[in-house]
Image (cartoon, rainbow over all chains, first blue to last red; front, side, top):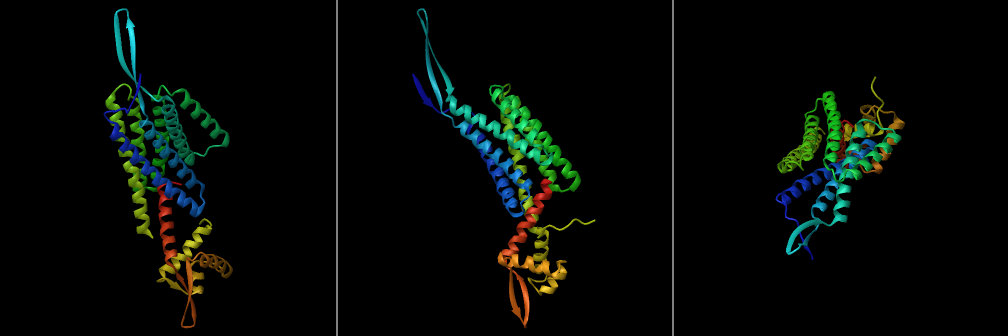
Length: 230
Length: 90
């Protein structure tokens, strides 16, 4: 007997709020980056916009995956005269698998694109990296801490780039930008240990939210300062 | 050595020159203020007028160039864009 139920997780609703906030921030950054690209045709704007778009879309897939309907399976097992009836919950595998794969793939490609703006990559390097991202995403689908560890490495390098930009321009806005990325990187450490400690996931989500709030604050400061300066 | 101005830099310099002169300027003054040759200025000006960023008016038998609202919005956008560029180190 199979019964359809929605999975009620204790952090279920709140997690989606954090993700929706991140999506809004990332899509706003995409909008401005691509708008500026239309104005001056500087390819870096296009790559920046594409990177934020991919990370934003990855969050959308994560949200969709969380909405995955789960099956409750009632299994009956007989041990001689004893009959055991137990319930197991299984996700709709195909949706869950595709959603999670796209979430991880787009996140890593997005981070790599962001990193590639500052550390120029040859075409061969790009193909090689995309290949490694693709196979590592596919073959580590059951060991998901590897995905967060990889994200941490990418975010660490991106933070270093923004920090070196800050050392050059000494802008407070760039400092906040570097902070936002270091905070998002730290959240990945907590996600890495989420399977071991339940609280780790919650802390990771809160830290990630702070990171995206700072990222949004950076954008607001840029727009405000730009208006003031004209 | 100062870097060569891009097309965008020149357009912004022209618009800022008009705006900083109270929104209207004589063509010759614009030429000096934006540091352009006569031919260069005419070429850029044609583009700016076609895009409705700049307009022409006649005042006391003199031709003046005026910055339009679209031109002012364009300056604001460019200013934002430059801040964005510096902040993200693009």
